[in-house]
Length: 264
Image 1 (cartoon, one colour):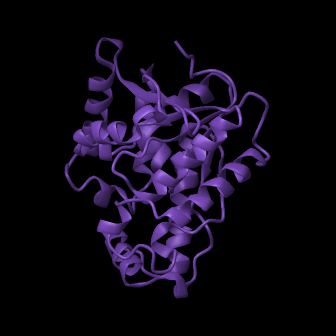
Image 2 (cartoon, rainbow, N blue to C red):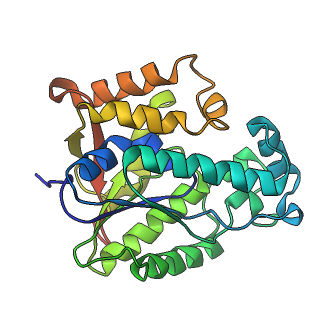
């Protein structure tokens, strides 16, 4: 079994919340054991009003932050608080979120649909940027989203992970939450779509680190009411999912080894 709670690790999240939501317990375990994990938020570029179209403006209204400058400040502050809670520094990269990439994605239907072919170039660029980060060390294990829920940004970061795997990096995909919580069939659908792109899953029992994961999620005050609109108690929903995932091992998080393009 792979030991995912030792050694250098980079946790790559598309947005300001994906790692704490999905695998914050594993990050906290690594930090508690002195392995100094790092978080990287990909789509965290500077934001100006001209980038905010009708679809993005609708998203901002749901977050109850509407000014572009305020959106950036609020979301970065939340991300920094969550990272501190887990014990892992976070770096913000300069790519724009899908909702700010011109007219490519103008509705949830498009945002959670197929990745536009031309965007695969971004995955190649992202893989190279990750390898040249100051946090990169020999033997670094990389964590990327599996892509449950099919958000295009999650798909794009997963593809970057495949390219890192092709360059010899050890890459694992985490189970995107809360998508995996509120739509369990989405996990099976994503795995079926990926085919041989991932191997058999690995469980990481997180024990008491579950509480740090929950506390880190709570830092995203603008997001929790929106992304957990299916429940009145996000802590209970996340905890119960972790307990179901781990079974006899107690609360756990699940990861899939990522294979390079062309693998079967």
